[in-house]
Image (cartoon, rainbow, N blue to C red):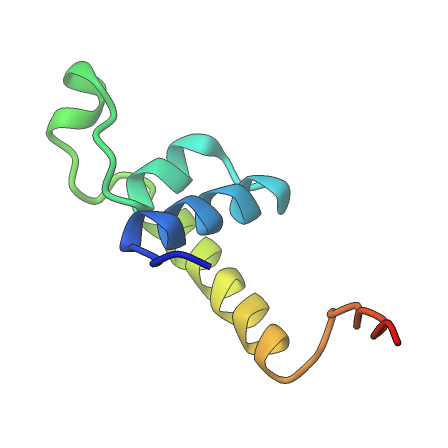
Length: 78
């Protein structure tokens, strides 16, 4: 396996958050991606509450993964 960079982790988070049903604008804002034009240029608090909820859900998901919850073990061949 090759080196992993921060963008790999961001891509993984984005993919999973989309699969979890979170709004694309909330995800993009949480990843500090620019939302074009005037719509995204001025409001630093945009989606603040939704981002808090989403990031808590993400933290809960990661905690579950760490503790073995919601993980389907793969059978070992042999």
